[in-house]
Amino acid sequence: MFSFKEIRTPIIEESKLFSRSVGEDSDIVSKEMYTWKDLDNKNITLRPEYTAPVVRSFIQHNLGANSSLQRLYYIGPLFRRERPQKGRQRQFNQFGVEAFGSPHPEQDAEVISVGWKILEDLGLKNSLMLKINSIGSNNCRKSYRSALKDFIRPNLDLFSITSQKRFKNNPLRILDSKSESEKILLEDAPKISDFYSDADEEHFSELRKYLKKMNIPFSIDTRLVRGLDYYTRTTFEITSDILGAQDAVLGGGRYDELVETLGGKPTPAVGFAAGIERIIILMKNKKLLKNKNSPDVYFSCLENNGLSIALSLSKKLRDLGIIVQMNTLRKSMKAQLREANKLEAKYAVILGDSEIKNKEVIIKNLKDGKQLKVSQSEMMDNFSDLT
Ligand code: HAM
Image (cartoon, rainbow, N blue to C red; front, top):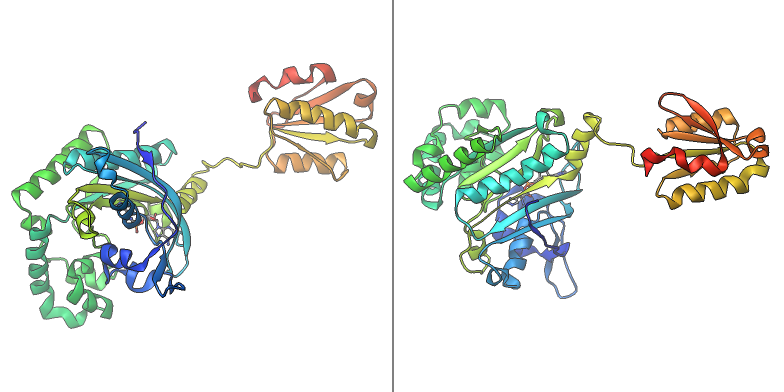
């Protein structure tokens, strides 16, 4: 639909890749990475995120030479040593995209629309909120950082130890604070939008225009700075109230300087990653997940002398691509039908004594309870809805 190409990167990377990109003072690098020394005394890390490995690979394999635009997607496991809770695991999975080459807001809009479309197609649109922000370009952030510090400094001792540390190293992250008292202290803090250059302003306003044109609903969250250091200008998150404390389903943004920081030619880029486990929580909550293990047909054979017929009829059904589960515990009729219902099978095919004698089977629709007796040779004609 969007014609992105898949990229796969190793699960293990050199640790310095993440300190140089995600940032030494970020939560991920300062306390969440699984890092150890290998036999060559090299620090290696289980990847805690995908963007830096994709950029490393983009540079190493000179992917920018193939085309001035490279649109890539990925899916796979990641590792962060966080405190596990609902929606937060130490090993989790993401899918995401990274689009290299275009500095223009239409690329941001396209990337956001990819994420939105996937979540919409999964049936989640009504449970989601898209928040966007622009943290401006480098110069804008420099002036803003010093204005924000000037604002916070007189009250610094009222802030938490974490925020006081951030004050030194990355004051913008204080805006991320979840503490109610800090939120109050920050109420009248200067806004980054007052520090945008004309180009920053135009970039952000065009992005908003494109999102509106695509009917993608959003709100502006001026505090959305995100916890990774590589972002420039656009940042965005898709959240859901259903998820509770860990409410972000998807997060991303523009990172125009990262390719150069990691040793490549200056290449603008924008991307997002979505947490698959959080999507599954939402889908379960909205009853959108089908029980994957549900058989189409539960084959219930009630007499031992019918087992070979049951096995051969089950094979015929499976040859047509129908998912069949056969009871091999020789349980009672009642127990077998109870299991068929529990498994949410669509049909039960029942082979009892008289059916064996008359070369027939009973087909029971487990949704409406209707049943009919058919000859074994005509049995297959009754499952056209399954093939
Ligand atoms: P992130 O916000 O760190 O961004 O992660 C993206 C998504 O991964 C989150 O919104 C969440 O759904 C999921 N996630 C993160 N940590 C966990 C966890 N411990 N357990 C379960 N799910 C989790 C990034 O990773 C950036 N690389 C996104 C990006 C791509 N920016 C630009 N391109």
